[in-house]
Image 1 (cartoon, rainbow, N blue to C red):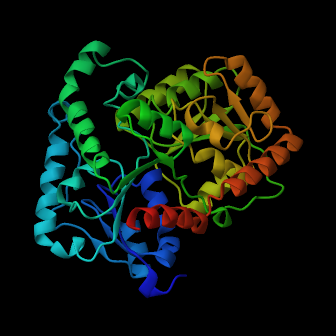
Image 2: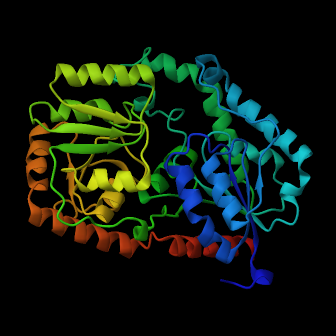
Image 3: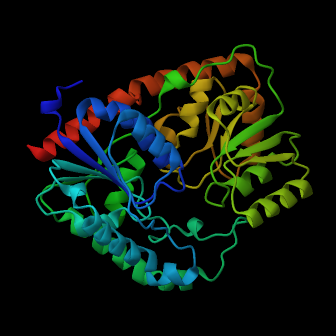
Length: 401
């Protein structure tokens, strides 16, 4: 830990923690390591009790407005960019309420997501900014899978959706460009795949700041009986490949445990589709860490047919627990999987290949070999909290010098 007098003051900004998905958990699990190198404080328009608990435990100042901001899910709001506009307004009101947020700040670490980029409206020109862009806003920039319903059908013609999203798309481009024009700004993706997407969408040369996984929190469970189910993790949606996973399992007599819940109507449709295809389906909103470890340890493997996943923490968690990771060969999954060595990377529509891989995953020798190689890859990437904090420290120090 650096002496307090030598630690830069770092303001971490995230628009909302309310969803508390992978991006939000990634921040929370790194706070303790960040505190070794920075005088950390956090600002968000919408908090979460797990963030609050960790900030309290570590004595990290957490700034939350008196009136919580939330992203609207209405179609009109998306078309008119209402949520982005209200987020900008909320940040301005927030700063008036609590001006101490920006006092004596050396740099800002801005993590993208709903309501995050809009904070540029309150950041003084002289404060350096690092933008950790976990992905360009996929729903605005041409990725049609984000618009699809749970079964993959589009709510309206794709060309019409593109037209309807013109206002929010242009606003997003304008806000990101406003940050990029500042001489004291820098962008990082969370994988090489996202680094390339940032260049394609925003014409910005970005670096890479990988996410964090603390392998010490994940232990291999020895001698577990392998059950006849696979696990998917993440909120159910077409983009996460939930529907296609059920489709892929048809005829295998292998069940699916989905962790992450989803929209009530979507879950109803998934259950009906699974029943029609004779695939046993169980759904859990979320599990405590120890329960998740136990569930994964007894599974045949962890599976994902997610569309162009930015990085994909699921394979890393599978490696850590010692179970096979079977992923679609798209997006950032290749960051932590070498096909045939640390799991399988498979063609989306070749179900015969998936079924063959599921049989491979049941072989004890493969399970041990893939897990060992997977952990080797993860260790080589240095995804532990302190290594990630050191990488962030390098970025921030370059910005403030």
